[in-house]
Image 1 (tube, helix red, strand yellow):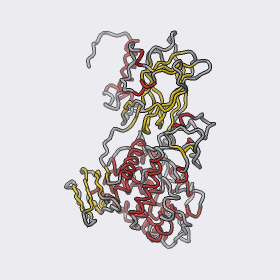
Image 2 (tube, one colour):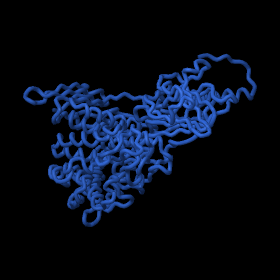
Image 3 (cartoon, one colour):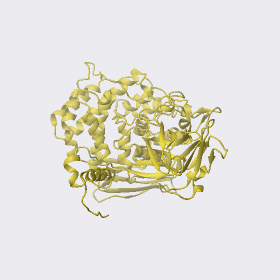
Length: 599
């Protein structure tokens, strides 16, 4: 790159300055602003850690008519493009022409859930060169992309706009949208005008980071589930770690725990985690509950304990000490004279258990024990013996009272993890009872953890195949906010258009805040099987901070073999486990010198 410098008028100088500013802002993903801008823009300039990739659709799922007077050459849109309009080859365009009585429309399938928007590249359109009005509808399912907002099965337009009208330029390019989607419907609203499209590419926005962790086994279904959980969280690693890319584009700190465990397992250290933990800390005084939910403030403490265990960043942990101590002191005041939790605020575990106050109470009792034990560990690391002793005493008090789990799998799982309930008893009487019925996408992770505590690894693997695999059977490429096995009965897949024959797996189901199409089909809290499979099937468990010691105890169940990788601050750990002729597991392990392997 070079510049030719000539004297400029004041007006030209201002125009050039604005142009340079815009250019550098757009290039921030690759470079910092140059020093000349530092004084003026240091408070407004922010580097975007993400990249953008353009993807052509994989399939034309539907079009409004087969009549060539309205739609011609739609298959052109499936070809790879370059994002550039030109003056040649009108045959290399898709024609969409609406009339007074027909709206030319097309539904595109991009093959996989994506985060981002849409780029339209046009050829000659109207003779007067005026823009053409086009309606765009993004959908996580095909039926959502066909729905009318606020009328059809709770199709919405909140959090991220997914249904709007734009002007498309003559012989140009436009890029719009910022949501989660797999499908896009395009409607030409201007009658008697030729919209000739060269391209309709997805503008896919994500963090360009390697998948350092991996999982492969003799069961392709488990492999796909592990990958899908990893990809679900990857899509939610945007500027902050969100729970959903269409809806719930927020830092819900309780929901973060399964996501952070997935980040640890798949990507290793990533700045999005401390950035998100700090955000929720900074916007929530210690006198209040994070996200208004008492359990979510407790999850913040447990996430910090786990984050330190995996990465060993003492300097970062020390930055949390003042807030941590205030929060721990506050939590210890919520124990009554009978040693029961009496937490206020929104008393919440997950949505399926939310209407069962006894189950919520039992779960909160267990969570408070787990949180104060985490606080005890962190206080020891931070060399605060007074807080360490206070947490220990509070835990001893809470253990004197054992609530009734009332048959709720969420409560039984947490009570197992808090050692309030014998693991095998909880598994046999509650968690494994009736298989994957009454599992939940969020707390299913803790149900799997409790099954592992009971030694029921094979049963947990079958739960994963049935429950999370049930979403794959319905076309999922990311895991959903909510799922129940009953939904899968006589219902269409998300990549099928279903108007009468069966129930719509997306629009006909959902409760609470996620009724119908408002339900997110990419929700990070549902990624629990990914860290679980690495931890218990590959058997990789971190036992000393910063992964300085890792215990490897595989549990293959009915698998013939399993292998994978695991990221540590010192490099990758590689494992392979394989059954020999006698059914005994033989393991090979490679690890960095700094990592001590315990077998």
